[in-house]
Length: 507
Image 1 (cartoon, helix red, strand yellow):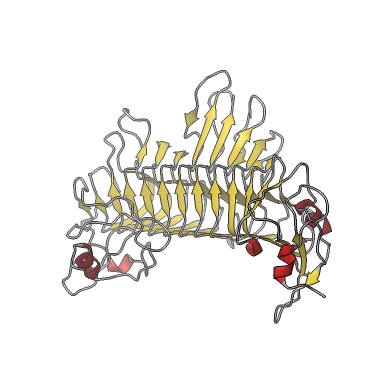
Image 2: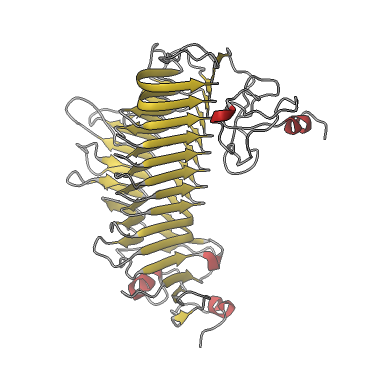
Protein backbone atom coordinates (compact mmCIF):
# COMPACT_ATOMS: atom_id res chain seq x y z
CA UNK A 1 0.00 0.00 0.00
CA UNK A 2 1.36 3.44 -0.93
CA UNK A 3 2.01 5.98 1.82
CA UNK A 4 0.62 9.53 1.88
CA UNK A 5 3.21 11.96 0.60
CA UNK A 6 3.81 13.57 3.99
CA UNK A 7 5.11 10.25 5.32
CA UNK A 8 7.23 9.70 2.24
CA UNK A 9 8.94 13.00 2.94
CA UNK A 10 9.83 11.95 6.48
CA UNK A 11 11.63 8.73 5.56
CA UNK A 12 15.25 9.03 4.46
CA UNK A 13 18.03 6.81 3.18
CA UNK A 14 16.09 4.14 1.26
CA UNK A 15 14.14 4.04 -1.96
CA UNK A 16 10.51 3.82 -1.01
CA UNK A 17 8.20 1.41 -2.77
CA UNK A 18 7.53 2.15 -6.41
CA UNK A 19 3.91 3.24 -6.22
CA UNK A 20 1.31 3.90 -8.88
CA UNK A 21 -0.28 7.33 -8.61
CA UNK A 22 -3.76 7.62 -10.06
CA UNK A 23 -4.68 10.29 -12.57
CA UNK A 24 -8.19 10.32 -14.00
CA UNK A 25 -8.20 9.43 -17.68
CA UNK A 26 -4.47 8.65 -17.86
CA UNK A 27 -2.22 5.70 -17.15
CA UNK A 28 -0.93 5.74 -13.57
CA UNK A 29 2.78 6.57 -13.61
CA UNK A 30 5.37 4.57 -11.76
CA UNK A 31 7.02 6.87 -9.20
CA UNK A 32 10.63 6.44 -8.10
CA UNK A 33 11.58 8.54 -5.08
CA UNK A 34 14.99 10.10 -4.48
CA UNK A 35 15.23 10.13 -0.70
CA UNK A 36 18.82 11.19 -0.07
CA UNK A 37 21.34 13.50 -1.67
CA UNK A 38 24.10 10.95 -1.82
CA UNK A 39 25.79 10.33 -5.15
CA UNK A 40 25.39 6.54 -4.97
CA UNK A 41 23.43 3.89 -3.13
CA UNK A 42 19.74 3.30 -2.34
CA UNK A 43 17.59 6.41 -2.57
CA UNK A 44 20.12 8.37 -4.65
CA UNK A 45 19.46 10.12 -7.93
CA UNK A 46 21.91 7.77 -9.67
CA UNK A 47 19.98 4.78 -8.31
CA UNK A 48 16.67 6.28 -9.44
CA UNK A 49 17.94 6.61 -13.01
CA UNK A 50 19.13 3.02 -12.92
CA UNK A 51 15.64 1.89 -11.85
CA UNK A 52 13.95 3.25 -14.98
CA UNK A 53 12.49 0.50 -17.12
CA UNK A 54 12.08 0.18 -20.92
CA UNK A 55 8.28 0.29 -20.71
CA UNK A 56 5.44 2.39 -22.15
CA UNK A 57 3.93 3.19 -18.72
CA UNK A 58 4.84 6.75 -17.64
CA UNK A 59 7.61 6.92 -15.04
CA UNK A 60 8.40 9.78 -12.65
CA UNK A 61 11.52 10.51 -10.64
CA UNK A 62 10.53 12.66 -7.65
CA UNK A 63 12.45 14.00 -4.68
CA UNK A 64 12.02 13.95 -0.89
CA UNK A 65 15.21 14.60 1.07
CA UNK A 66 16.24 17.38 3.51
CA UNK A 67 15.97 20.80 1.92
CA UNK A 68 19.25 22.62 1.39
CA UNK A 69 21.25 19.55 0.42
CA UNK A 70 22.75 19.36 -3.07
CA UNK A 71 23.03 16.19 -5.14
CA UNK A 72 26.58 15.89 -6.50
CA UNK A 73 27.36 13.33 -9.18
CA UNK A 74 30.71 11.54 -8.93
CA UNK A 75 30.62 9.63 -12.21
CA UNK A 76 28.47 8.81 -15.21
CA UNK A 77 24.82 7.96 -14.54
CA UNK A 78 22.45 5.67 -16.40
CA UNK A 79 20.75 7.13 -19.47
CA UNK A 80 17.03 7.82 -19.57
CA UNK A 81 15.01 4.81 -20.72
CA UNK A 82 11.26 4.27 -20.98
CA UNK A 83 8.69 5.80 -23.26
CA UNK A 84 7.57 8.70 -21.02
CA UNK A 85 9.87 9.91 -18.24
CA UNK A 86 9.43 12.91 -15.95
CA UNK A 87 12.08 14.23 -13.53
CA UNK A 88 10.27 16.67 -11.22
CA UNK A 89 11.33 18.59 -8.12
CA UNK A 90 7.86 19.97 -7.33
CA UNK A 91 7.52 17.98 -4.09
CA UNK A 92 10.45 19.98 -2.70
CA UNK A 93 9.01 23.24 -4.07
CA UNK A 94 11.67 23.48 -6.77
CA UNK A 95 14.59 23.34 -4.31
CA UNK A 96 16.22 20.31 -5.94
CA UNK A 97 19.77 21.08 -7.14
CA UNK A 98 21.67 18.45 -9.12
CA UNK A 99 25.32 19.37 -9.58
CA UNK A 100 26.85 17.39 -12.42
CA UNK A 101 30.37 18.04 -11.10
CA UNK A 102 31.67 17.37 -14.60
CA UNK A 103 29.12 14.69 -15.60
CA UNK A 104 25.89 14.99 -17.59
CA UNK A 105 22.79 14.45 -15.38
CA UNK A 106 20.31 13.49 -18.13
CA UNK A 107 21.01 11.71 -21.42
CA UNK A 108 18.73 10.15 -24.02
CA UNK A 109 20.75 8.00 -26.41
CA UNK A 110 20.09 8.01 -30.14
CA UNK A 111 18.82 4.44 -29.93
CA UNK A 112 16.64 5.00 -26.88
CA UNK A 113 12.96 4.06 -26.62
CA UNK A 114 12.14 7.42 -24.96
CA UNK A 115 9.36 9.29 -26.73
CA UNK A 116 9.11 12.11 -24.16
CA UNK A 117 11.38 13.52 -21.45
CA UNK A 118 10.14 16.19 -19.04
CA UNK A 119 12.44 18.04 -16.61
CA UNK A 120 10.58 20.35 -14.26
CA UNK A 121 10.96 22.40 -11.08
CA UNK A 122 14.66 21.81 -10.43
CA UNK A 123 18.16 23.14 -11.08
CA UNK A 124 20.83 21.39 -13.12
CA UNK A 125 24.31 22.87 -12.92
CA UNK A 126 27.94 22.18 -13.85
CA UNK A 127 27.21 19.27 -16.16
CA UNK A 128 29.92 18.73 -18.78
CA UNK A 129 30.30 16.76 -21.97
CA UNK A 130 32.44 16.60 -25.08
CA UNK A 131 29.80 16.92 -27.78
CA UNK A 132 26.16 17.94 -27.35
CA UNK A 133 24.24 18.99 -24.23
CA UNK A 134 26.28 19.52 -21.06
CA UNK A 135 23.39 19.06 -18.63
CA UNK A 136 20.66 17.54 -20.84
CA UNK A 137 21.68 15.63 -23.96
CA UNK A 138 18.79 14.28 -26.06
CA UNK A 139 20.22 12.60 -29.14
CA UNK A 140 17.10 10.80 -30.41
CA UNK A 141 15.32 12.80 -33.11
CA UNK A 142 11.84 11.52 -32.20
CA UNK A 143 12.09 12.35 -28.48
CA UNK A 144 10.01 15.31 -27.30
CA UNK A 145 11.92 17.30 -24.67
CA UNK A 146 9.98 19.50 -22.23
CA UNK A 147 11.74 21.89 -19.81
CA UNK A 148 9.40 23.59 -17.35
CA UNK A 149 10.44 25.86 -14.47
CA UNK A 150 13.99 24.52 -14.80
CA UNK A 151 17.28 26.33 -14.16
CA UNK A 152 20.51 25.56 -16.02
CA UNK A 153 23.69 27.19 -14.81
CA UNK A 154 27.39 26.73 -15.61
CA UNK A 155 26.78 23.74 -17.86
CA UNK A 156 29.44 23.21 -20.54
CA UNK A 157 30.20 21.34 -23.71
CA UNK A 158 33.69 21.06 -25.14
CA UNK A 159 34.74 21.06 -28.76
CA UNK A 160 35.55 17.72 -30.32
CA UNK A 161 36.86 18.67 -33.75
CA UNK A 162 35.63 15.39 -35.27
CA UNK A 163 31.95 16.00 -34.42
CA UNK A 164 29.57 18.99 -34.25
CA UNK A 165 29.41 20.58 -30.80
CA UNK A 166 26.06 21.93 -29.66
CA UNK A 167 24.23 23.29 -26.62
CA UNK A 168 26.25 24.21 -23.54
CA UNK A 169 23.33 23.29 -21.28
CA UNK A 170 20.77 21.52 -23.48
CA UNK A 171 20.78 19.75 -26.82
CA UNK A 172 17.53 18.43 -28.31
CA UNK A 173 17.55 16.45 -31.53
CA UNK A 174 13.74 16.38 -31.50
CA UNK A 175 10.86 18.69 -30.67
CA UNK A 176 11.56 21.01 -27.73
CA UNK A 177 9.41 23.10 -25.40
CA UNK A 178 11.01 25.46 -22.85
CA UNK A 179 8.77 27.40 -20.45
CA UNK A 180 9.49 29.57 -17.40
CA UNK A 181 13.13 28.54 -17.29
CA UNK A 182 16.51 30.19 -16.67
CA UNK A 183 19.78 29.65 -18.54
CA UNK A 184 22.75 31.42 -16.98
CA UNK A 185 26.53 31.27 -17.59
CA UNK A 186 26.42 28.19 -19.79
CA UNK A 187 29.20 27.75 -22.35
CA UNK A 188 30.57 26.07 -25.44
CA UNK A 189 34.33 25.90 -24.92
CA UNK A 190 37.53 24.58 -26.44
CA UNK A 191 39.08 21.52 -24.84
CA UNK A 192 42.81 21.86 -25.32
CA UNK A 193 44.87 24.52 -27.03
CA UNK A 194 42.83 25.10 -30.19
CA UNK A 195 39.42 24.28 -31.62
CA UNK A 196 40.33 24.48 -35.33
CA UNK A 197 36.61 24.70 -36.09
CA UNK A 198 33.62 27.00 -36.18
CA UNK A 199 31.15 24.10 -35.95
CA UNK A 200 30.29 24.74 -32.29
CA UNK A 201 26.94 26.39 -31.63
CA UNK A 202 24.50 27.40 -28.91
CA UNK A 203 26.09 28.56 -25.66
CA UNK A 204 23.01 27.55 -23.68
CA UNK A 205 20.70 25.62 -25.99
CA UNK A 206 20.72 24.00 -29.40
CA UNK A 207 18.13 22.10 -31.40
CA UNK A 208 18.42 20.72 -34.92
CA UNK A 209 16.07 18.85 -37.22
CA UNK A 210 12.64 19.09 -38.86
CA UNK A 211 10.51 19.67 -35.78
CA UNK A 212 9.02 22.44 -33.66
CA UNK A 213 10.65 24.48 -30.89
CA UNK A 214 8.89 26.73 -28.38
CA UNK A 215 10.68 29.02 -25.91
CA UNK A 216 8.32 30.97 -23.66
CA UNK A 217 8.69 33.15 -20.56
CA UNK A 218 12.35 32.23 -20.13
CA UNK A 219 15.59 34.07 -19.42
CA UNK A 220 18.99 33.64 -21.08
CA UNK A 221 21.76 35.53 -19.32
CA UNK A 222 25.56 35.61 -19.79
CA UNK A 223 25.83 32.49 -21.96
CA UNK A 224 28.58 32.25 -24.56
CA UNK A 225 30.37 30.35 -27.30
CA UNK A 226 34.10 30.83 -26.69
CA UNK A 227 36.74 29.08 -28.80
CA UNK A 228 40.53 29.03 -28.86
CA UNK A 229 40.79 29.00 -32.61
CA UNK A 230 43.78 29.13 -34.94
CA UNK A 231 42.00 28.82 -38.24
CA UNK A 232 44.40 29.93 -41.03
CA UNK A 233 43.30 33.49 -41.66
CA UNK A 234 41.15 34.59 -38.76
CA UNK A 235 39.96 33.99 -35.23
CA UNK A 236 36.38 32.73 -35.41
CA UNK A 237 33.72 31.47 -33.04
CA UNK A 238 30.66 29.31 -33.51
CA UNK A 239 27.19 30.90 -33.62
CA UNK A 240 24.37 31.54 -31.19
CA UNK A 241 25.74 32.87 -27.91
CA UNK A 242 22.64 31.63 -26.10
CA UNK A 243 20.45 29.78 -28.64
CA UNK A 244 21.15 27.95 -31.88
CA UNK A 245 18.28 26.53 -33.94
CA UNK A 246 18.60 24.84 -37.30
CA UNK A 247 15.16 23.61 -38.33
CA UNK A 248 15.09 22.52 -41.97
CA UNK A 249 11.85 21.67 -43.70
CA UNK A 250 8.69 23.63 -44.42
CA UNK A 251 6.85 22.10 -41.47
CA UNK A 252 9.24 23.38 -38.80
CA UNK A 253 8.06 26.18 -36.49
CA UNK A 254 10.14 27.98 -33.86
CA UNK A 255 8.33 30.30 -31.44
CA UNK A 256 10.29 32.55 -29.07
CA UNK A 257 7.97 34.63 -26.92
CA UNK A 258 7.92 36.65 -23.68
CA UNK A 259 11.61 35.94 -23.00
CA UNK A 260 14.70 37.96 -22.10
CA UNK A 261 18.22 37.70 -23.51
CA UNK A 262 20.98 39.71 -21.82
CA UNK A 263 24.77 39.65 -21.95
CA UNK A 264 25.09 36.65 -24.28
CA UNK A 265 27.92 36.62 -26.82
CA UNK A 266 30.24 34.76 -29.16
CA UNK A 267 34.00 35.11 -28.83
CA UNK A 268 37.37 33.60 -29.66
CA UNK A 269 41.05 33.85 -28.83
CA UNK A 270 43.91 33.02 -31.12
CA UNK A 271 46.40 30.75 -29.36
CA UNK A 272 49.51 32.63 -28.39
CA UNK A 273 47.69 35.91 -27.79
CA UNK A 274 46.60 37.34 -24.48
CA UNK A 275 43.30 38.91 -25.45
CA UNK A 276 39.81 37.86 -26.49
CA UNK A 277 37.94 38.96 -29.59
CA UNK A 278 34.26 39.39 -28.73
CA UNK A 279 31.63 39.15 -31.44
CA UNK A 280 33.32 36.65 -33.76
CA UNK A 281 30.30 34.42 -34.45
CA UNK A 282 26.83 35.29 -35.76
CA UNK A 283 23.89 35.81 -33.41
CA UNK A 284 25.04 37.07 -30.02
CA UNK A 285 21.75 36.02 -28.46
CA UNK A 286 20.39 33.58 -31.06
CA UNK A 287 21.23 32.15 -34.47
CA UNK A 288 18.02 31.01 -36.19
CA UNK A 289 18.24 29.12 -39.46
CA UNK A 290 15.98 27.01 -41.65
CA UNK A 291 15.65 26.17 -45.32
CA UNK A 292 11.90 26.76 -45.40
CA UNK A 293 10.59 26.81 -41.85
CA UNK A 294 8.89 29.52 -39.81
CA UNK A 295 10.25 31.69 -36.99
CA UNK A 296 7.88 33.66 -34.77
CA UNK A 297 9.73 36.05 -32.43
CA UNK A 298 7.34 38.11 -30.30
CA UNK A 299 7.35 40.19 -27.10
CA UNK A 300 10.99 39.61 -26.13
CA UNK A 301 13.70 41.82 -24.66
CA UNK A 302 17.29 41.79 -25.97
CA UNK A 303 20.02 43.79 -24.21
CA UNK A 304 23.83 43.88 -24.35
CA UNK A 305 24.25 40.84 -26.57
CA UNK A 306 27.23 40.74 -28.96
CA UNK A 307 27.77 38.81 -32.19
CA UNK A 308 29.46 39.14 -35.57
CA UNK A 309 26.37 39.63 -37.77
CA UNK A 310 23.37 40.16 -35.55
CA UNK A 311 24.24 41.31 -32.06
CA UNK A 312 20.90 39.95 -30.89
CA UNK A 313 19.40 37.85 -33.73
CA UNK A 314 20.99 36.39 -36.83
CA UNK A 315 19.07 34.93 -39.77
CA UNK A 316 21.96 33.92 -42.00
CA UNK A 317 21.42 31.84 -45.15
CA UNK A 318 17.89 31.16 -43.95
CA UNK A 319 16.66 30.44 -47.49
CA UNK A 320 12.91 30.36 -47.97
CA UNK A 321 12.11 30.80 -44.28
CA UNK A 322 9.23 32.91 -43.02
CA UNK A 323 10.19 35.25 -40.18
CA UNK A 324 7.89 37.36 -38.01
CA UNK A 325 9.40 39.78 -35.46
CA UNK A 326 6.76 41.67 -33.46
CA UNK A 327 6.71 43.76 -30.27
CA UNK A 328 10.33 43.17 -29.29
CA UNK A 329 12.76 45.57 -27.64
CA UNK A 330 16.39 45.61 -28.79
CA UNK A 331 18.66 47.75 -26.62
CA UNK A 332 22.45 48.20 -26.63
CA UNK A 333 23.26 45.11 -28.67
CA UNK A 334 26.29 45.04 -30.95
CA UNK A 335 27.07 43.35 -34.25
CA UNK A 336 30.80 43.69 -34.78
CA UNK A 337 30.59 43.22 -38.56
CA UNK A 338 26.99 44.41 -38.96
CA UNK A 339 23.49 44.42 -37.50
CA UNK A 340 23.49 45.47 -33.88
CA UNK A 341 19.94 44.23 -33.40
CA UNK A 342 18.83 41.90 -36.22
CA UNK A 343 20.86 40.56 -39.12
CA UNK A 344 19.10 39.31 -42.26
CA UNK A 345 21.70 37.92 -44.68
CA UNK A 346 20.65 35.78 -47.65
CA UNK A 347 17.33 35.42 -45.94
CA UNK A 348 13.71 34.95 -46.02
CA UNK A 349 10.27 36.44 -46.21
CA UNK A 350 10.11 38.65 -43.17
CA UNK A 351 7.77 40.93 -41.26
CA UNK A 352 9.24 43.24 -38.62
CA UNK A 353 6.55 45.38 -37.03
CA UNK A 354 6.17 47.37 -33.80
CA UNK A 355 9.64 46.80 -32.41
CA UNK A 356 11.74 49.24 -30.42
CA UNK A 357 15.43 49.55 -31.34
CA UNK A 358 17.58 51.78 -29.12
CA UNK A 359 21.34 52.32 -28.83
CA UNK A 360 22.28 49.27 -30.87
CA UNK A 361 25.47 49.56 -32.89
CA UNK A 362 27.73 47.84 -35.36
CA UNK A 363 31.47 47.76 -35.76
CA UNK A 364 34.09 49.03 -33.35
CA UNK A 365 33.75 52.33 -31.52
CA UNK A 366 35.59 55.17 -33.19
CA UNK A 367 35.40 53.77 -36.72
CA UNK A 368 32.76 55.47 -38.86
CA UNK A 369 30.52 54.05 -41.59
CA UNK A 370 29.86 50.70 -39.98
CA UNK A 371 27.04 48.56 -41.27
CA UNK A 372 23.55 48.61 -39.77
CA UNK A 373 23.46 49.77 -36.17
CA UNK A 374 19.91 48.47 -35.65
CA UNK A 375 19.53 45.95 -38.48
CA UNK A 376 20.66 44.93 -41.94
CA UNK A 377 18.37 43.97 -44.80
CA UNK A 378 19.35 41.31 -47.31
CA UNK A 379 16.07 39.49 -47.84
CA UNK A 380 13.55 38.21 -50.33
CA UNK A 381 10.82 40.46 -48.95
CA UNK A 382 10.42 42.53 -45.81
CA UNK A 383 7.47 44.38 -44.31
CA UNK A 384 8.88 47.07 -42.02
CA UNK A 385 6.23 49.02 -40.11
CA UNK A 386 5.64 50.86 -36.83
CA UNK A 387 9.21 50.48 -35.55
CA UNK A 388 11.19 52.89 -33.39
CA UNK A 389 14.82 53.10 -34.57
CA UNK A 390 16.71 55.19 -32.03
CA UNK A 391 20.25 55.24 -33.35
CA UNK A 392 22.54 56.83 -30.75
CA UNK A 393 25.83 55.78 -32.36
CA UNK A 394 27.56 58.36 -34.55
CA UNK A 395 29.79 55.61 -35.95
CA UNK A 396 27.17 53.36 -37.55
CA UNK A 397 24.02 54.07 -39.57
CA UNK A 398 20.74 53.02 -38.04
CA UNK A 399 20.16 50.38 -40.69
CA UNK A 400 21.68 49.06 -43.90
CA UNK A 401 20.00 47.83 -47.07
CA UNK A 402 21.60 45.72 -49.78
CA UNK A 403 18.89 43.55 -51.35
CA UNK A 404 15.18 42.72 -51.21
CA UNK A 405 11.67 44.01 -51.78
CA UNK A 406 10.88 46.24 -48.81
CA UNK A 407 7.56 47.83 -47.92
CA UNK A 408 7.92 50.44 -45.21
CA UNK A 409 5.44 52.57 -43.27
CA UNK A 410 5.11 54.62 -40.07
CA UNK A 411 8.61 54.01 -38.72
CA UNK A 412 10.33 56.61 -36.52
CA UNK A 413 14.04 57.24 -37.06
CA UNK A 414 16.35 59.34 -34.92
CA UNK A 415 18.43 60.14 -38.02
CA UNK A 416 18.19 59.89 -41.78
CA UNK A 417 20.66 57.05 -42.33
CA UNK A 418 18.35 54.19 -43.26
CA UNK A 419 18.71 53.98 -47.06
CA UNK A 420 15.60 52.01 -48.03
CA UNK A 421 15.00 51.63 -51.78
CA UNK A 422 11.51 53.17 -51.86
CA UNK A 423 10.30 56.51 -50.57
CA UNK A 424 8.12 56.31 -47.44
CA UNK A 425 6.29 59.53 -46.69
CA UNK A 426 4.58 58.05 -43.63
CA UNK A 427 7.85 57.55 -41.69
CA UNK A 428 9.54 60.38 -39.79
CA UNK A 429 13.03 61.46 -38.85
CA UNK A 430 12.48 62.80 -35.33
CA UNK A 431 15.97 63.71 -34.21
CA UNK A 432 17.21 62.60 -30.78
CA UNK A 433 14.58 60.52 -28.98
CA UNK A 434 14.84 61.95 -25.48
CA UNK A 435 11.18 60.98 -25.06
CA UNK A 436 12.00 57.26 -25.11
CA UNK A 437 12.10 55.91 -21.57
CA UNK A 438 14.54 53.48 -19.97
CA UNK A 439 13.65 49.77 -19.81
CA UNK A 440 10.92 49.30 -17.23
CA UNK A 441 8.69 46.46 -16.10
CA UNK A 442 5.10 47.53 -16.73
CA UNK A 443 3.46 44.15 -16.35
CA UNK A 444 3.81 40.74 -17.94
CA UNK A 445 7.21 39.18 -18.58
CA UNK A 446 9.76 41.53 -20.16
CA UNK A 447 10.87 45.16 -19.79
CA UNK A 448 9.61 47.79 -22.23
CA UNK A 449 10.77 51.31 -23.11
CA UNK A 450 7.75 53.61 -22.71
CA UNK A 451 7.47 56.67 -24.95
CA UNK A 452 6.57 59.91 -23.19
CA UNK A 453 3.07 61.29 -23.51
CA UNK A 454 2.94 63.62 -26.49
CA UNK A 455 5.77 61.90 -28.35
CA UNK A 456 5.33 61.02 -32.04
CA UNK A 457 5.15 57.31 -31.14
CA UNK A 458 1.77 57.76 -29.44
CA UNK A 459 -1.07 56.94 -31.87
CA UNK A 460 1.47 57.34 -34.70
CA UNK A 461 1.37 53.85 -36.20
CA UNK A 462 -0.19 52.18 -39.19
CA UNK A 463 -3.37 50.50 -37.94
CA UNK A 464 -3.38 48.09 -40.88
CA UNK A 465 0.03 46.71 -39.82
CA UNK A 466 -0.69 46.73 -36.09
CA UNK A 467 -0.40 43.43 -34.14
CA UNK A 468 -3.38 42.44 -32.01
CA UNK A 469 -1.38 42.84 -28.79
CA UNK A 470 1.67 44.76 -27.53
CA UNK A 471 4.77 43.57 -25.65
CA UNK A 472 2.74 43.17 -22.45
CA UNK A 473 -0.10 41.29 -24.11
CA UNK A 474 -2.30 44.42 -23.95
CA UNK A 475 -4.78 44.75 -26.79
CA UNK A 476 -3.94 47.12 -29.66
CA UNK A 477 -4.85 49.78 -30.70
CA UNK A 478 -5.74 52.10 -27.79
CA UNK A 479 -6.35 55.83 -27.56
CA UNK A 480 -3.00 57.16 -26.39
CA UNK A 481 -3.38 60.89 -26.91
CA UNK A 482 -6.84 61.46 -25.47
CA UNK A 483 -8.57 62.50 -28.71
CA UNK A 484 -11.17 59.76 -28.37
CA UNK A 485 -9.84 57.74 -31.34
CA UNK A 486 -7.77 54.59 -30.95
CA UNK A 487 -4.70 54.31 -33.17
CA UNK A 488 -1.75 51.95 -33.06
CA UNK A 489 1.38 53.25 -31.33
CA UNK A 490 4.83 52.95 -32.89
CA UNK A 491 7.16 50.59 -31.05
CA UNK A 492 6.72 47.60 -28.77
CA UNK A 493 4.48 49.30 -26.18
CA UNK A 494 0.87 50.42 -26.64
CA UNK A 495 0.00 53.38 -24.40
CA UNK A 496 -3.42 54.64 -23.41
CA UNK A 497 -4.60 58.07 -22.32
CA UNK A 498 -5.79 56.53 -19.05
CA UNK A 499 -2.26 55.24 -18.42
CA UNK A 500 -0.92 58.74 -18.94
CA UNK A 501 -3.37 60.34 -16.53
CA UNK A 502 -2.40 58.00 -13.70
CA UNK A 503 1.31 58.22 -14.44
CA UNK A 504 1.18 62.01 -14.25
CA UNK A 505 0.13 61.97 -10.60
CA UNK A 506 -3.65 62.11 -10.79
CA UNK A 507 -4.22 58.92 -8.80
